[in-house]
Length: 253
Image (cartoon, rainbow, N blue to C red; front, side, top):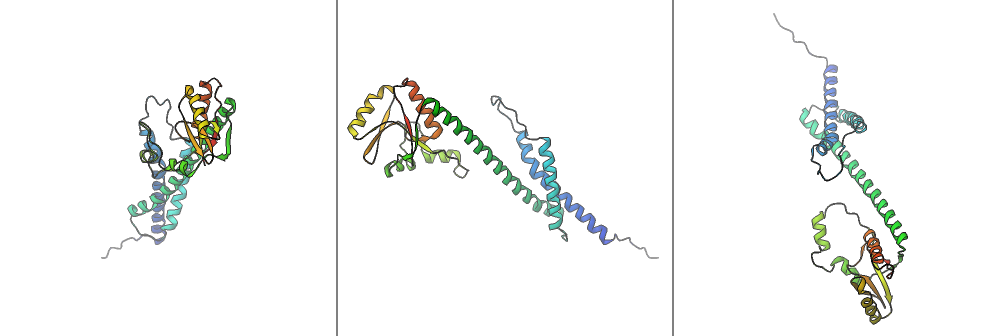
């Protein structure tokens, strides 16, 4: 007597296999979307930070689920006739959502930084208007010698060079730079007059004389500064001198 083994219909085998592919794709996408947020929630927040971390919201959970369903469908299409084990499918599927979520995170971070930059510039513009500090963008106070100082800046006591700052902050990261300005206190036609003006202003601080072509500028010590810092420094100089000194900002180009 022979025993007949029941064989599942091919359609049922294919259907169960594609359901498995879909499940693996959904799980891989959820891992890529949720694990980074979970790591942020698990991490310790400094007690003096003054903020709470809310990395997971209902809206994000719904979006992550919809995203995972889409990735699951993509995996089913890509693995339609595949017979690879779930491990290989998971590793292959994990790369697609990981890449997409990284791109979205980078784009979101870039948007947040640019929004903060807009807010910072608006605050700096308001401070410049209230303090009565002229900002000259059409004049570029720079010469080949001055430009060299941006590449190889003068090293003051306990001041990091540009190369050291880049190494400390990570040279491979995305860097956002404000335009730089000189804080100019006086403009003279001769070096003697500029030095005389610098000596007269020493009661309010330390200044340098910068030559650009045939013109000499009495500038705040420290070189060109990012716009927000230059506005703050110029406002502080004017406030400290009680209006006796009227600095202006000149773009370093």
